[in-house]
Amino acid sequence: ELKVEQNPLFLSMQEGKNYTIYCNYSTTSDRLYWYRQDPGKSLESLFVLLSNGAVKQEGRLMASLDTKARLSTLHITAAVHDLSATYFCAVDARKLEYGNKLVFGAGTILRVKS
Amino acid sequence: GAVVSQHPSRVICKSGTSVKIECRSLDFQATTMFWYRQFPKQSLMLMATSNEGSKATYEQGVEKDKFLINHASLTLSTLTVTSAHPEDSSFYICSARVAGVSIQYFGAGTRLSVL
Image (cartoon, rainbow over all chains, first blue to last red):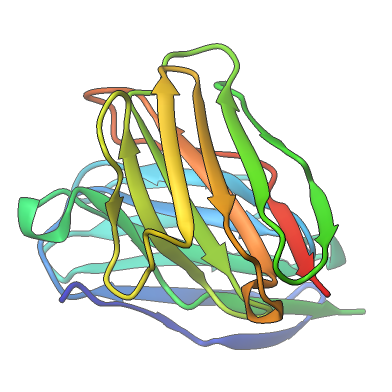
C-alpha cells in the first residue's frame, strides 16, 4: 500500500518566522503535488514537482522534491497571516498496482499568529 | 488554467432521498474523473475513478450501489448518493484529468448534509 506521511500535522507559527513541512512517501514516484485548502473550500494547486531535484517558488512558499529520499518539502519564509490554511501533499501513484491515482497526505494545518 | 465546475456547492436533504452531484470540465475533455470524500479535519479519500464510457473503479470499502457514478461524456461525470443517511454527510470533491497528463484539476466541492 502506498503511504504518504506529512508532518507536522499542526503548525502554529509566529508572523515573520520560517518553517518547513515535510512529505515522505513509500514508493518511487517522480510526481508530487502541493495543494492549499481554506476552510470550507476545495483544493488550490500550489506546486507541481515533476522530477528529482525540482524546486519551485511562489512568493513566500518554496517546494522541493528528492525522489531518491522519497521526500518533498514545503518551506515557508517569513510567514504572514494570509498563509493560514491546510496544506496537502499528494503523490502521483502511477504504477498500475496503485491504480494511477493521487494519494494524499493527512494535511498540515498551518496557523500564523500575529 | 483548466476549469472544473461542480454543482451544487451545497445540498441539504432528508434521510432516504437521493442526491446527484455534477462535475463538468469546462474547457477541456476529461478522459478520467475522480471522486473524493473529505470528512472534517481529515484528508481527501478517493472514492472512485471514472473513465468516459466505462464503468467506474471503486476503492475498497466504497459501496458502488450506494455511490453511483456515471461518466457519460468527456466533459461530465455525476455522483449520485442513493438513499442518503446522516453518515453520508461530508464534503465531496471531484477532479478531472486529460489523457496522458497527470495533473488533476479540482472542482469547488459539494457539501452534503443529510438530516
